[in-house]
Length: 252
Image (tube, rainbow, N blue to C red; front, side):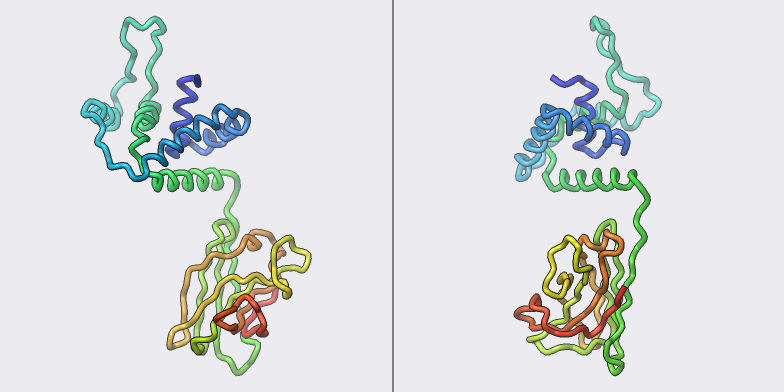
């Protein structure tokens, strides 16, 4: 049986209610204590089983207690009944919220749980160091007769990017544009024969323009790994074959 304090930490971790320092310490405990991992897994299983369950209102007395704890910040800490031999205080409002939320957790959906876990991961990551500087690649045409531009802006932390295209000629239905990330020959990543990773397949509108959010490969987190970013025209049925030369490129 885990201590009351540890139970509150478990609930706080699942609910993303821990500070970055608390979360880091708890994950260290989690890695060293298989029984603790089982308890976290149990709460996860409860959430999963509640995925398709209808929402259930909490009992009136519990709802009133939660509202009172939230709305009255000046209220003194609650105590156990006087007959308690230990005379311990109940958790403070934050601990009371975690404990009450742990009781209600069975009524939460898995989608909320996933969101909380993602937020928890982001909070921990943000506490470990400064964010990486954004990257911008401005691709230039290899043919001077082509008056077009392609810009790729990348956030290395989230691996999210924005692809901005201007004045690229629209293609027939059997062709597509492909954005490639070219890496060093000895880089430990899966590439094609040209040391390239297919990053995005795209088309443009009638004016030759496009603005699109994309996801980029993990190589953008490794300084010096990316050697070029390029765009080619490929067969729409097999863009991964990478048979065409670069139409636009930035070499690093």
